[in-house]
Length: 201
Image (cartoon, rainbow, N blue to C red; front, side, top):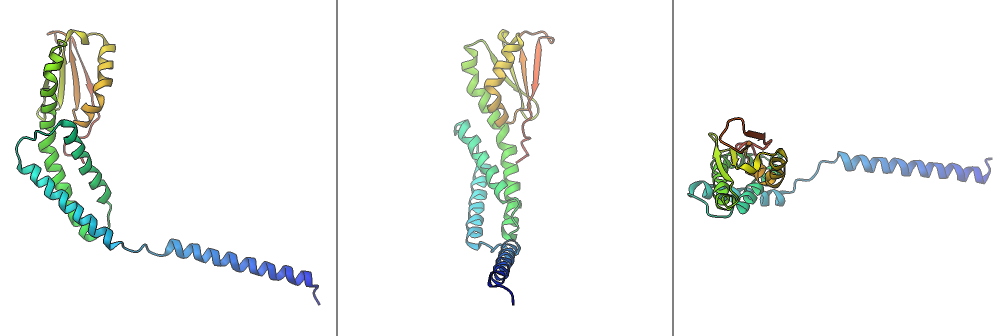
């Protein structure tokens, strides 16, 4: 006969094994079990996408937007955030809406960003003029921004100025910033901006 202590030790081991097996099965079930489809959440998302598409259509069908630049940029960023949220969805309804949303966003960005760049230049012309700085746009897509003024001759001034405007020129998707400090073609410096294209969400 086995001593009682030895029997108890064996029983204890079996209990531990059973508990470990049970835990392993539970973990496997948790990870292998498919996630339930949150139909209510999907319905809310489809409604949200539908409303956003309607909102974009209104923007596409209206003329000039007199809303301030910061608000308009924020609106475009909210479109991008929504698109990023739904672009990897496996729901068929959402996937169909996503494609329409993508098309609408590209359309409105292509229309709006050149206008936004125009509006930015118009908003800065007077205040910069007081500092003897001229500001202008060029390029087929109005994505080259030029500042002209004697103050831009030192490279340090150019770099300091770039730091101050970097966020807004990036948000407005300018592709190049040019500094000129005289009429000479030699007195010019340009900086490429690694911003998104107008067609990029």
